[in-house]
Image 1 (cartoon, helix red, strand yellow):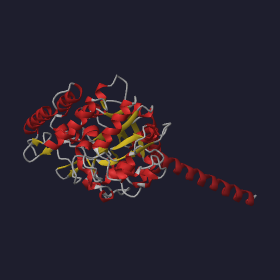
Image 2 (cartoon, rainbow, N blue to C red):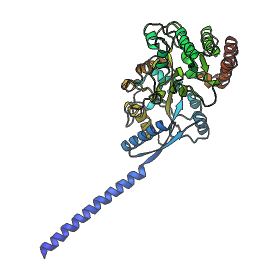
Image 3 (cartoon, one colour):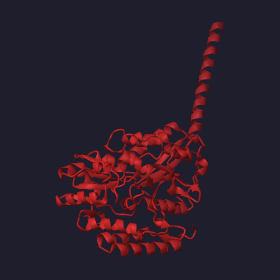
Image 4 (tube, rainbow, N blue to C red):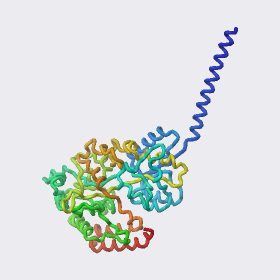
Length: 438
């Protein structure tokens, strides 16, 4: 009887211990659940990119169980929607900002300065791990308001199958020989047009389409400077920039080049290239996943230059990820930003994706490892020898009108020299009116 009582006591004791153990687990889980915070993250994305971002969010939440990510995708009019949200104090905790809107966004006063966050927190991020040029768009009066997520230096994409069919030398051979000039580019485009193809489509806008061409006029490889900020003056009426516009107009006049703004509605340069009707187009690496479907031989090469020199710089299209200054969870927001932009985060987002160049050092092999295109290293070289947007035009509120006046050259055949002088005069007036704080 005594042995029986002892056994019962032991069993009861074990039961109570187990009950206490599981109760503690339940309490811990409940506490953890109650401590989990929700971060809102917003960016733009096409369907393929969105899927990759969702996978990154899941990856991040698995490593950070105290954080729940609420992901918002904007498919159109992103800049307008972001600026509206900033004005109404309804912006997410973290969000993308494009290079064309970054200065307006900074001047809203709603972005958190990020200088003090480097080298701190649960996920360490170092500024020196990035190329300094990529911070230029997001740095204002010594403060950094965004971290580069990746980048897209602009290069020329070309249909080698058409060029071979025309019996012409490849852009790569011309480039290797120091003969990749404006004249050779024009000659190939003109010949292609004569044979029923499109030669080159100049896309609409200032930055991607025009900025790289401004760099190709210099033999010494300098960066084009469109603004004399000290004197609040636009430099777009410099003779060398007018010369660039005249070169583009020459091709448009004889239909060797086509301005995208004059194409039928719904027709795009990338669609024309993929269908095998276009010889030359200018894009960043974002087109690679699309062009992998091409049934012809294609490759990339730096922009042709006036003198055939190989050291011309190119424009780098980019975005940054920023933090709302009103976020209630800044430590967690920084943890997400650092995880998103550090080496592991960029590798996770860009591996096998092929739509951008890493903004952080050490993983450039992601761009070249599958050898598509054959000279993919030119994307990386563009980051190392590139320059960002001239943001002052947009910051002064002059971009929209300036672009409308520029299009009159390409669509309405306005005189390039007179029109560029008119644009420069207008932008200078806007600088002196709106950039008084510089």
